[in-house]
Amino acid sequence: MAKLVFGMNLSLDGYVDHEKFAPGPKLFRHWIEHVRDLAGSVYGRRMYEIMRYFDEDDPGWDAERRDFAAAWRRQPKWVVSRSLKSVGPNTTLVSGDIEAAIRGLKARLAGEIAVSGPDLARSLTDLGLIDEYRLYFHPVVLGRGTPFFAGSRPRLRLVASDLIDEDTIRLTYIPA
Image (cartoon, rainbow, N blue to C red; front, side, top):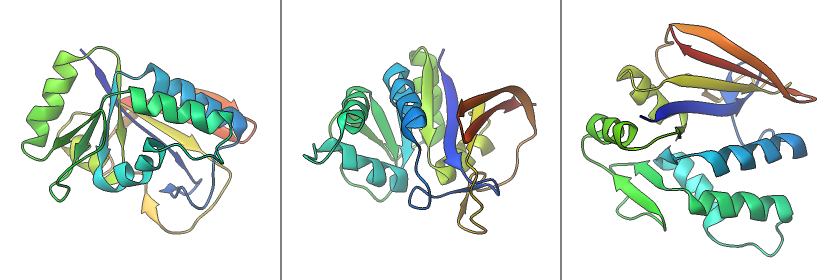
């Protein structure tokens, strides 16, 4: 049975914003390895549209971006959306019963399935489907934006803390 994991980079005050801060080289390498090891990823529409950037090669990419794109393209992806009509390669659109679809993925696959997007994570948290939360804190205070926890705050228990690079700590929680 697969484990559903929601993890993202966030500011010290709890906001996610890929345009306000970016991972350094060591953290980016961590994300490449993480994506390479996944059984798949479940995306909300907005995060999927951001990540589709990696569907097409960009001649300006460095080796790390090419590695990330290759890992991202290889993994199966599911996009939860009622507004999208089509999705890219190696991707399945989920527009019906989200709970049944995600429970089916968890039962059918082994390993980790990443959840990408705070709004999707809120829905899956409300359904009791997320097994683990990984918060990658950066030394940035944004003051506003999209919160990591977009809805009610689940009761959590800390199970690990890891220094990922010189500026980023990962806190790992499971539902309490």
